[in-house]
Image 1 (tube, rainbow, N blue to C red):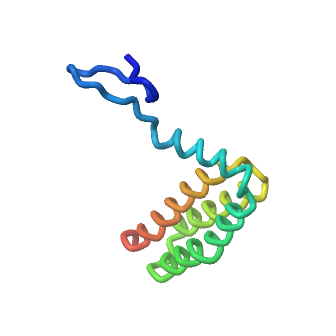
Image 2: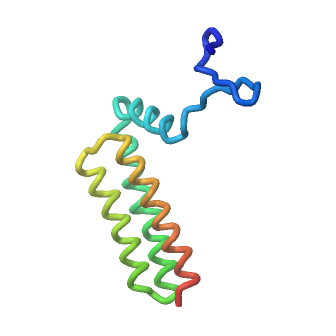
Length: 117
């Protein structure tokens, strides 16, 4: 069943439910649109935020709380992945996803430094 001017609708127990696009699909569509207009700006923001904010803060927290070598490697590798993906001029949908995952890894490493002796 289709309502004019809307997305396909299906019925579930007598209720009409609109089909939703997954969040990741919306993210990739947005990232593809950003690739053509603001690629250099996003690359600069990702590299700058990683080198001036996330990585130094995570390293400081890891070193203050015992300097676990495993956590240092997690932070360093996440940092390198972001820089290499931006320097190799990958598409924006890839570099933004890599940046978000690497940021989560760095934040998790910094948080784990409080728990791992």
